Image 1 (cartoon, rainbow, N blue to C red):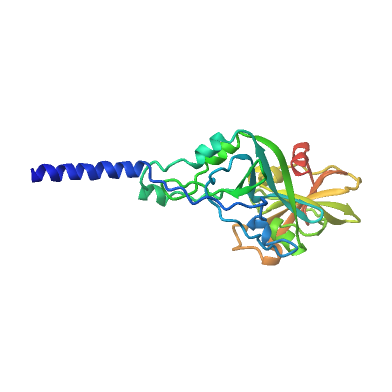
Image 2 (image 1 turned 30 degrees about the vertical axis):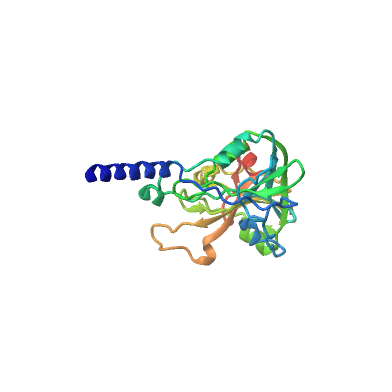
Length: 312
């Protein structure tokens, strides 16, 4: 009888443990109600803003309180758009969603499915999820606490449900930048000069594009004034696409707008590395006029329609 009782006790413990693992989820306390819903400036802009950005005190995030029936959601992008205008002003986006929130509420109540797998969780990267606010019919607001997965990371399932709703408003929120902030954020300066034409020829593999952004300037008397920038992705343009351009034919038209990409010289086989003063330079693209590609001391190259469309 004693052995049988011990076996039954062990089985009961295993079953109870499995049941616990399959529903190992304790919802967070109800969220604190707020009269307003707002988005804080993302971290990548807060550090370069013209004015100091003091985060607004947030109400406690949590689960949906009893009696709170959401009718809209505000999603705050955690990163900026990468676009800068002449201000210079950068932006981040906030989006308002409306519709049936049954799927959202179900996703918020979802339980973790299993105990943490130590090996699996060790290689799982934490995802930066946007701040999420819900608003009810009376205008009350709550900040949502995301459910966690079996690794203790925030689950994005709720965003999948949010994206099934209808967008009622999308707003680009402006954040003015200082001159230093513009350079730190985009790699652009407020002014630029046109490279001096020369007779050297680019050698494939002799440089690397290091640009964070495509910097655009209006041009007058050879001096460029910053008018905007967009984030640059290196797969958009290779150095080969530039070095294999044909020399530009003779042309006397004057460009009124240019785009610039920062670049860095690569050491040649017979040198260790270029001098720091000679290492960094700009590749300048005339967006109108002769539509040439200019690099200091090099023969002007003829740009292409596709290349100019990419850089506008």
